[in-house]
Length: 542
Image (cartoon, rainbow, N blue to C red; front, top):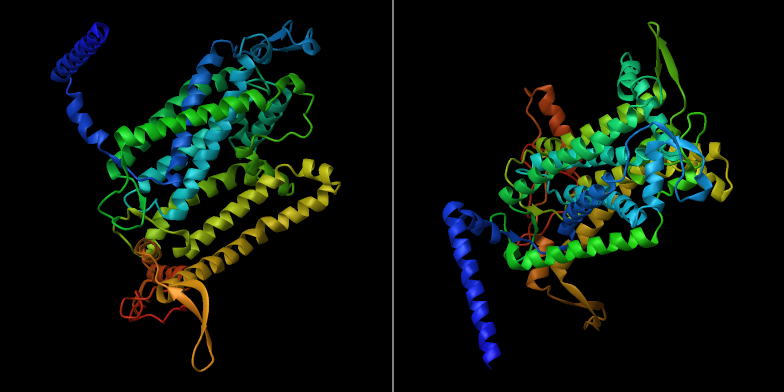
């Protein structure tokens, strides 16, 4: 009993000391007043919103493991002779960067585990950003007022690609050296200034002695700093603009239904971080990735067979392999269309289109209001179809990035496989667009049928006249709200006789974008939307 009283007294004194310290700190730095609104911040509870957190926590793992690796990595291309613990490479001349990476793998306690965790975290980081961007696109979470956050997210994705390529190239092994040689070809293909850019980046003729130290500085200082700044800006905008949410009972454009930041969301997100760290640790321990000791050190007179970059750069590699070699001689200069088009112009146009899409959709719809509810993909068939077409286009290029391995594995001719993929890269997105749009319209029509008739019970009854009818029961209020949520978009009104060319173009694009739609029934049995008065009635798929 006496011991229990002493423990209780010690606990009260400790609590009092913490309270007095907190009060003293708050009087000098009013942190708690500012934190009141923060801890009450509401976050919606849905698994799709965790994709951004996966990117955040994999980035945290990247920072932690990267700090460990910087203690042992030597960013130098000076030649040395390997004398470490890996027997097959002893006595081989190599760069100091490659020798230090092999030493991390075999001579530093836990070094190989940390290296592999770092690599798997990099793959997860880029994959989760890509999945998060797809979620935002398909649900329309890029609409006003979140256009700036969409631009920030796209920039984060591109920086993650560059950061991954820089880290992938640092070991100076035969595989990454082949990738650097390819990157030099990309730079050289830029008309007029390509030679000067290549000399500036590599410090002279390839490979030079400056590229690894420069990539190291960018990989550990410049790019992480930019990533931290953009992630901070992204999170600040999420807090300021409030989170999007799926439509449901009690959820409107003016509120957020979910869990408060503390303690509910904090416990959930910390559990997710623990799971991410655990999965990455298991992957690093059990799944081998980037075994550079098998590739050997880089030599300019050698090339690695079956050489493919990490998946996030595979689409550029695929575009490079699919485009036929072509060049043009103009005014004493040679323009090499391959790799200029697939490696320089195509990524630029691709990301510019993604940057511009939120503003293009707002221009087509004429919708200037704020949107805080996520669209169901089936409710926006054209947007969903465009996203599916882009995904198929990317997938075909990714497959093309490994066409040599596919040809050897399935014993087919590389030339024939190239032509199949060249056709697929144009036909596949068109087919995916058409199929996805038809599927979305069919699913939307099914929703309308459920709203008007109810859900089938599975029982069939016979009427007096002898007709058979299936039984139906009304939907629950929550499901009716989900199916009926969202507006049915309509095309812009047709412009008058004195309209400008721009206005006529806008009306045509809007008509193409929204002419195929399924209108929801209104409470009186009519339609929730109607075509504008001055417009040819659209095709309604009821």
